[in-house]
Image (cartoon, rainbow, N blue to C red; front, side):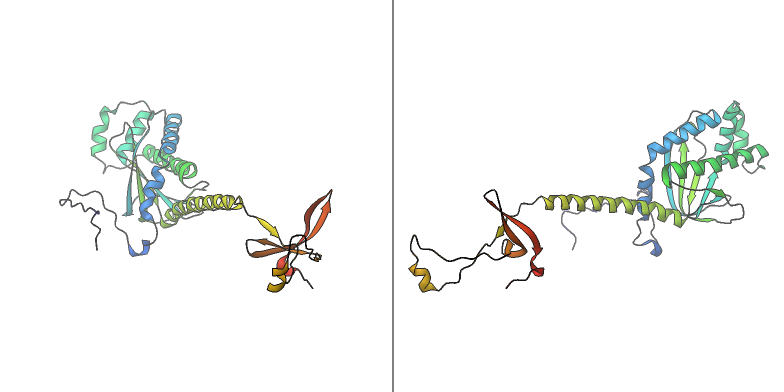
Length: 287
């Protein structure tokens, strides 16, 4: 039965928020949390990307937005091999041309024709810039923000078109085109493993806090020095001033509540009695 307090929102066709399809092999794995994991590093990504373009290309820009897409087919990506799996990189040609013009200090007025005609052959200059951007951005983003540490090596022989996640990075001042980071399932699992480690760390902190609180709970340790067996008639005859013969054992039991925990010897020092020579109750023998 649906709770009376729960609310259902109905969207018209085509006006609903973005939907994420979960396949059977991803059930039980929080793939939907990957965007949040990356967005939590947005400020750090913004800083390292801005510094990179300023130092390498004399371009003043910043990270504007990151879009996410799961289970995509991406061709013509440059593929890199790591100790975890494979990472792909792709940059839209309009963005590549704009960065190239800004690097050489050229005007963007002549870019309209080149951007419109993306079918034209890529030049050697564009190809060199594309390789440079791919190798440096993959290593920068991977090592600094997402997968520290990460060893990246170009894999020109790999043919991969299906990727588990696609991350599109939009830069400020470059409205036409994005550069894309492509993650295989192994790297997605590595991201999620970091999330599990954080969860385990939180549980460990809670457990340590609980143990610390438990260790400060007050308890009273009671020692039973002697017992005198008597009948009810003998107990009824006791009067003020009567003496009872009592002999102390070599070790006496110590209790917390009604639970015996230790046996200890009774010692005297400077007119005071102390417990000493503690033994676990189950290990002590008495006659």
